[in-house]
Image (cartoon, rainbow, N blue to C red; front, side, top):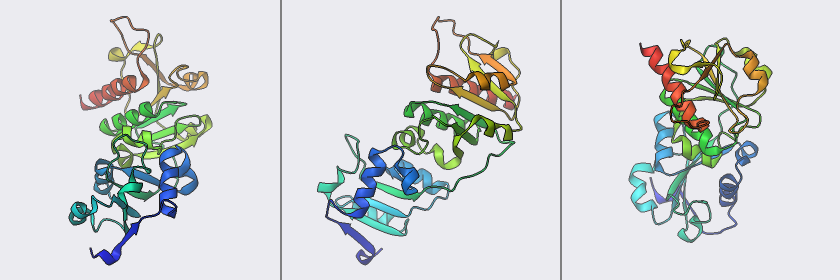
Length: 259
């Protein structure tokens, strides 16, 4: 790549920097702008492996000389940002020296037969990202986020997902009636009700519903579920973190499928 094809940014008022600050500081900004910011080489590599094409590859100016050989032909546009301005892009204490600007994927319809995870008003971005990672790991390729769930493409969710986003069929802002499109059994979890997970025959494919951190799965979804399970906790704790519970449940489904 020649230097002629590289844009250098030296002004804090540059339009790209303004956009990046919005994307990193406002969890829902991507919905308005139609683009997301992937910070760090791990997320960038994960996107490329899945066939995603960045609109722009952005680098700290001091990092560009060593990045040029590997990253110099990956995007439609390459940008080097003055080091003095770079720290203002990221909210992290130790910002990564590069990132991609990606177009947000277009909305998709529910796949009625896909192994699915339904997120029912989960609030914590770390929990949401962790569940996306577990979904991808255990063969659940569709995630439906009901209204009230943390923004799926928010920076904290992206970081917690560790690249899982790029291999998943993601739907946001769904309402309970939208789940009628699913033709797979709904499974709900509870701390105190339902058959113990290890004793329950688990259908495949299925849709696991993971509920709000404090309130759990809504009454309406509990009523619609075909299967209800609980995770035994012989240590005596009242409940599990929802991301931990999701990992256990999704792994149980994957293990039962493999038997």
